[in-house]
Picture 1: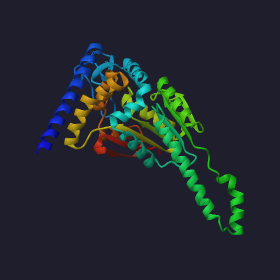
Picture 2 (picture 1 turned 90 degrees about the horizontal axis):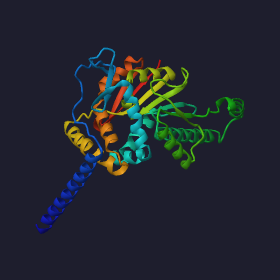
Picture 3 (picture 1 turned 180 degrees about the vertical axis):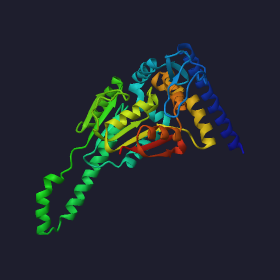
Length: 341
């Protein structure tokens, strides 16, 4: 009984310490950061269509959109998003681990397993930032190449003369082409951090870094086998235009894959997730990255993004076929997939 009382007392002390820490961080943030009133979405006068995230203000021809819970001119959003990721680039990977408790690594691994790329495939990773998806892609393809080589060696251990002859004549033809990953991001600072990671890992072969806008990609038509965008499309001003660009640069038969935060399906988990997102993530942003406002925006941007079914419809309306989605971690994240025919 005494032990239970001590445990309860210790837990009470820990809770009091955590509350004190949060109060200090919040006081610090209020001194240096103008926090917008939570819950103000600025929906008045907006037109909400099924396949776009932009809205229109009452002034004719004055287009506006959301930046988190704020309503801003469309021309301003891209600049503000750029500034967010420029500010957090150095701590971006660290914050991903802290915010998701490391689960983001599993989500990205699931993306690669669903993709199942084979040697010779060309990947375009848009909003690829620090290169997480590209690094996983190249590693996965190398594993597939080594696996194919082992199978070939095993099958040729006791070959017939006919097998030897056929293998000799088709050796060059069957040699797999080099797989390539192109990381495209509008933010130069994020790309710089990604290049530094690649250099430290010794990963250079088959990897390119390109500055480019998801709404106006700097590539010709029909260039890539797979297009990925992970936790980036909600930051795009015109999602419909980004989807059309994805369709344009994919080869016929190419695959679109999007990993993005979505709508939690379990009501209990949804309440816990909301509490954690709004009360903890900005605090972590202030403590780890020294930036409350950027992570407040990131939390708000998730709530403004279309849910699973609405985003599926947007992908279909862009021209993709066989569109499906898979909920991960109860809908905290969704993986959407579609094909260009």
